[in-house]
Image 1 (spheres, helix red, strand yellow):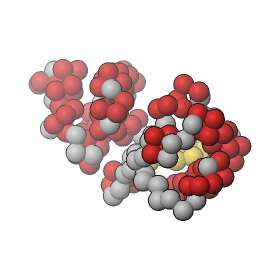
Image 2: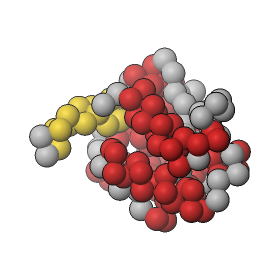
Image 3: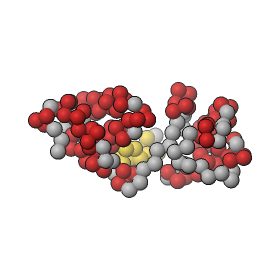
Image 4: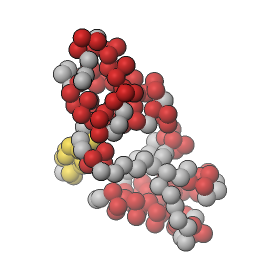
Length: 160
């Protein structure tokens, strides 16, 4: 299933739950509950409909944090790995790209989450600094990440 298929399914299910949105233009970064005055039951029904249609669990703790992030160009296409999970081909961003995305969206998810992702990556992927630098350049967060990389690796081994 492509990203466009998922988006179309999500919008179709949303207009099933809230039919008055059928003619609305829905911005990709909209907080759906606020922008379209969805009450908690509408939102819960939408999440349940997505689960039935796509077979994806969205834990209740994540409901208020569900947001859409837009990528384009290399930030969208670089760093994708293909895995086979229970016979299904799943495309997932690499660990290095995920860490960089955490820094890119640090104002939305919290810098503490980004730092913890970097620490975890450093423990699990020794020698992955060049991958981090590559994706940081693509996502334009090199200057943001550099102080954290320096602190973790020491200035003598800093990423160029």
